[in-house]
Image (tube, rainbow, N blue to C red):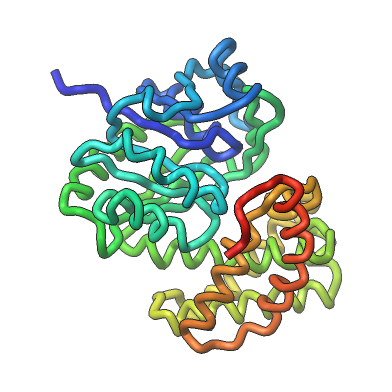
Length: 326
């Protein structure tokens, strides 16, 4: 009999908690790394998922110490982007010779940071499309996108064993409710496609303190949103990313659809910043600004939003004694 497929999800926030609940529901051996009251509630009462697709409580193993878990087949890194560098060393005890590590962060820099510590041969590209958040200790609310799209794929430095492990990963995900695994031929392009959307969404909504309905309805902010899309698209193309020429128009139509269907929707970056928490500002807008510098592309609007929002970001990080911005 083959060994059971073991998964560690590092971070049990909205994304990590949703994935853990759905995989456990599908019979996968899942352990989450969490902390505080969230951890205690999961250990005592399970992980509750309130979902537009139906509610349930998943029996999920949980710990604060990754070294207690042992070697796993798959590590899904579902922390905030700004936490990746700090937690990477603690992932090391989870790695066997053929363990794969898949990040889910909003950004393009997590694979490089993980690879620098864990070895790039273990690291794949990754992204997720889902609307989920922590409603309370041990409780995840899934309130948008019936089926989460979890994408992954090989990167240039991924080891030869990763292809085999992707096949095992696909088997573990097969049949999971509310979860679709997509193994991409060009996952790097898909990650850039996501940051194209998230950079404009996070930047304009957070700077204006408006939800997506407000932003789309206001001509000035709608124009700024589209100009940010165009700037990020130019950076992607100059960086050798194979985004289609009409991607900006496609993404803008998607956000207009979101504004019509869920006008009060806001990005997680905005929610974090307004709550006084460290956010992913540096890993979203900052990553685009850094990539633009390498590609020698001007991004005046994205850069201005990044600089303006950095004042609040630094204030929040000082208050939280969090890691400094690069």
